[in-house]
Length: 148
Image (cartoon, rainbow, N blue to C red; front, side, top):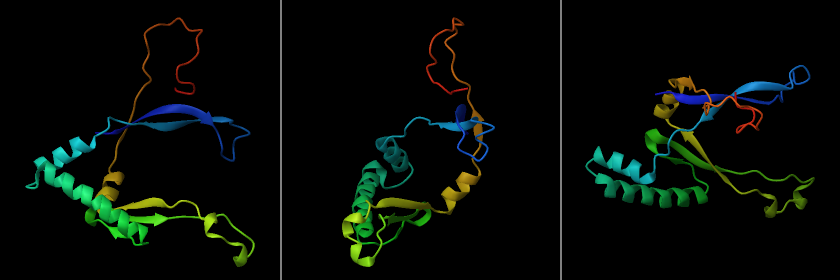
């Protein structure tokens, strides 16, 4: 299956914005959400652990992962990938001016493992056309401005 996208017209922020104030860009159209329950059932059906066992392992992984990340450690989750925390801060002129309160809230970063990186490179794309309601009356506001 392919990732679906639609074309939208947006303001051009590139160096050629004087000649082309707007450009057409691809925008991903998300598919259905696979719920946590659906995911654990699907994984459970293909393992001896069953869905209850998969849920228990993932719940515990969440607790252990958070603990290691809070302690500044990177956590490798095998073929899935590696998690780490990252943060930035506001700048000051001298070391003495720096206060811990200048540090911004940490963000969780994820580096995908080899299987997920390979999957990305094998992805196909499919353009979808905006749905029309069949009327040609015109004159009204567009429901999705910029959508082509």
